[in-house]
Length: 381
Image (cartoon, rainbow, N blue to C red; front, side, top):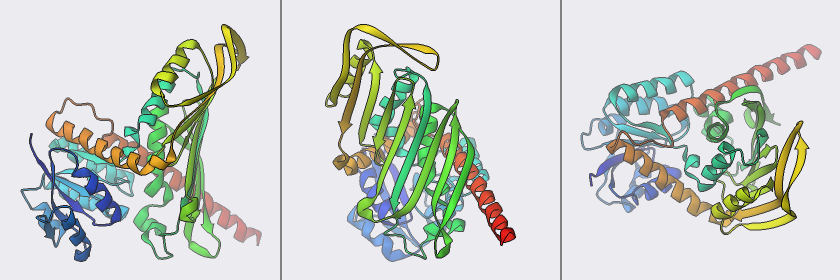
C-alpha cells in the first residue's frame, strides 16, 4: 500500500484530536506541523517524534515530501491557506467552512478540479450510520412525504471568552457560516437542495459586538426546516435535537453528532422488518397492532398500516467513540478516491460549496433584517 504523507496547519486542540484519529487509518503518516505559535506544534511529537515542525506555511507548502495538508485554523485563514497548498500541488482537507466567502470556496473547488487534487471540507456527519438509515427511510418514502423539520442547537459558550475569534464576524463568518454548514449539509443530503426563505440573528444583551443566537428557515422540496443555533449554555447543558416530520411519522435525533434516534410511525409489516433489521438493538413499543392492514387518511390521501409504534435506539454516552469513527471514515473515503478516481465519495468539494451557499445567504439575510430593525428603532425613538 502507498503511504500518504500529510502535514497539519493549525495545531489547536481539535486538530490534535483529529490527527490522533487520522494516523490510525492504514497508509497514512503524519510528517509535519505548522502553527504561528511554535509551542503549539510540539505536542504533536507525542503522536510521532520524527515529525518536522515548520516555521511558515510557505516552507511547509514547498516541501515535496508532503502529499496532503490538513487545515484546522480559524475560518478567515482557510481560503488563503487552502489555496497555497493546492497551488503547491497538495491535496487539502479543511475544517469547516471552506472559506468565509462563497466565491472563495468556488475558486478553491475550481483549482482542485483543474489540477486533479482533493479539496474537501470535514463534513463528517454524512459518515454516521444514523444519517444513512434516515436517508434510506426518506428515499424509500417509508414514512411518506417530508413535511417539516427542525434543528435546535443549545451550544456551550463556556470556552468562548469575550475576545475569542468566534464572536468576530470577520474571522468566523458568523454562526451560520462557522457552525451551521454542518447541518445545512445534513438536511440537503437527506432532502435535496434547499433555499433560505428567512433568517435573523440576535445580539447578547450588554455585548453589542456578540451575536449568540441565530435562526433560519430553509425550504426543501416543499417542506420547511427551522435551524436555531444559540451559544449561551454551560458545557454541562450543551445539547442538540433535530426532527423530521413526515405524513406517517417522525424521526428525532439527539446530539450534534447524532448517536440516538427515536421514531414514531404508522408502518406496514415490510417496513417493520426493515426497522428491525437496521436497528437490531432498538427498543420497539407497539401502541397499536392489527393483523389486517388498516386505512387512515391525511392530506386528502389514504395510508395503509399494520402498526403504530415508537422505536428508540442508540446511546448518547457513545458520542466520543462515534465522533472518532466518523473522522476516520471521512479520511478513509477521501484516501480511497486519491488512489482510485472512480470511487464515489460521500463528501466532495461540492458539499463545501453548497453548504456555504446556504450559510452565506442566511447570514446576509439576517444582517439585512438586523440593520432594518435597528433603523426602525432609531426612527421610532
